[in-house]
Length: 570
Picture 1 (cartoon, rainbow, N blue to C red):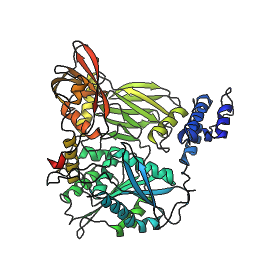
Picture 2: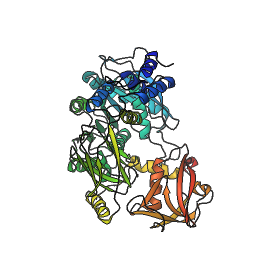
Picture 3: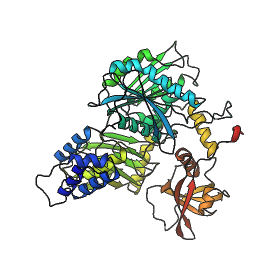
Picture 4: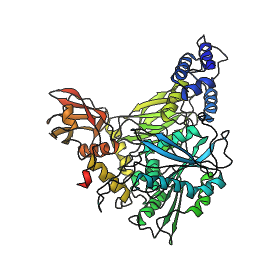
């Protein structure tokens, strides 16, 4: 049932413009965090008629941010348990899974202030559901003393789907990972139940959980204030670590660890992050093995206290990589239209932004008055070419819709603009210079055990994209949507596969897959396979394919999903 005061607010705002119009906190909060569909509908109607919803001033946006700073309402579920008595619940996550979660609140917890959160993931993959539950409870236990003293909440998910399947061999350990969107859903549910500071959420884990922390932060560097990998396998891929570079990292490692390929992995992570200027603490202990380091957690928490999340850095870099959790298209205030986009953006002055981009057709910028002066005309330069100049209007509606999409009320952007990447030769050369500068200088090590097994499990469940082909220039008559765009001439199509069922034929020229163009040096069908293997889930998803056939573009729709594991590892 809609709240009466909200319906009254909607009626009051449906009249003519009022000179004393102010941001309505009730409408804002009901639009973002409605108690019911009717609640949202009333807020939506009020927002459509509100005189303050468009053409907002800097002061108006400040008022909006103050309203959002209080965060979402905490679910009324009785008095939560504090101290050693844990709060236990189950979270429904995307894809249909459920994740049991345990939360320990410090004894001083009250919902009238926001508390820092330690999101602690156990190791594995465990051998059973019961093993996952025991491991999650152990993560609560090892952090309990230090978080109690420092005033932190600690939450640990039991990753009951991240269990090893039958048929384990030296080269095969079939298991599924806790996907980033699942971890995000768990954190969102914890935030809905308890009063959490979104700028003080730290991801940690031991062993496999530590590698999840690295993967999530590299894919979404705007999620966490820091990560704390413990007994980690590390990472040596520079492109992945460039994405992680904005996030403070505190590593605890033992040189006697025999559950990883070797200490060279975490050492490589330390060396590369140091070279990239990361805010890093790397502590290595010669007498320790694959274990926790709870006696050092008080030092870790003191270090974390002075490191709130970076929300609006003046420079942003988006680099795709081959890690199992793909880089988000959107990184901070920058978004690449295409998944292969390599984009560097820098706030040069309050009225000018410079971008260098390759392998994407457009770049979207979400901006606020901390980044630029929205009262002044803005100039955007892409690959040395001025592509946009003008004034951007602040929009409450746009800002609120973006907060709803990100589920992050601290990242508020008053305006946005999408700019095209020029296709002239000088622009193409500038884009190529960016990827040349980003070429790795540190030799990659052997893929870590956790990812080697996880990738093997994906390839077992999705052995082929269902067709082969070679890269060719775009056919005459096809207008490119991005610089360096190419096409793929289809060779063979697997009988009975998803592509064949969609109607793809040998001889077709594939232009896009899932709305994504192909690019020179993008890997063609092999690159597409790597992307799909990481993106697909057990539940089927539809992908639209555009193909050039007999002088015209045809649209095909294919349904793709991960298949079953081989029975018994056959």
